Length: 207
Image (tube, rainbow, N blue to C red; front, side):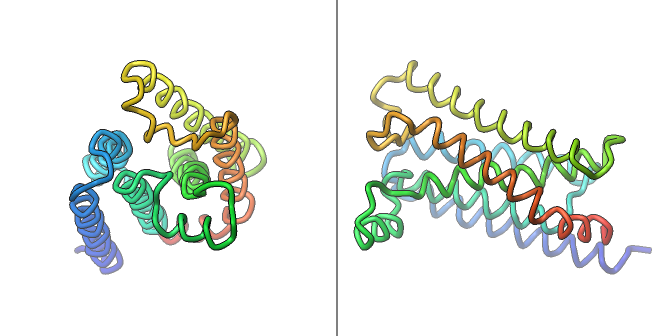
């Protein structure tokens, strides 16, 4: 007999996948720069393929799937417009006389905040680690290493392609952009485990 909650969850997850595909198609239509779009969207596509293939063997909570969708949308919107030219954040920059478009800061905060949920759920389900300070520390380390690895990837692409990767780097003239990116990912991961850990636990228990 199929559990009713499981069936409802499956249908919801299909809806989330459909939303992802719709946004992916939208992002591919007349992007600001096709090469930048490809670089920004590729991690989202790979991530969705992985969780789809492993769905029957390892199922995340619906909370995590929703957060993953949000993260992929952030990436795809950034790929479509480039992070330095996202219209809403251009408006915020101009309205409040800010020094730059801060959409990339949102993206890097999400790069720490959302993977923290993913790492936390995997470690809780697949390891002997107990909930507590050591688990939180390891999650934060994982997220910071992901952020640092992404910065190294950006550096490698820039070295290999030259000016073609300028929009992908998105430094907007800030020599400390790389450090700021990792800092925001760090803050995102800390907020995730320290503020939302108990909320996450409730979803895990329901699953």
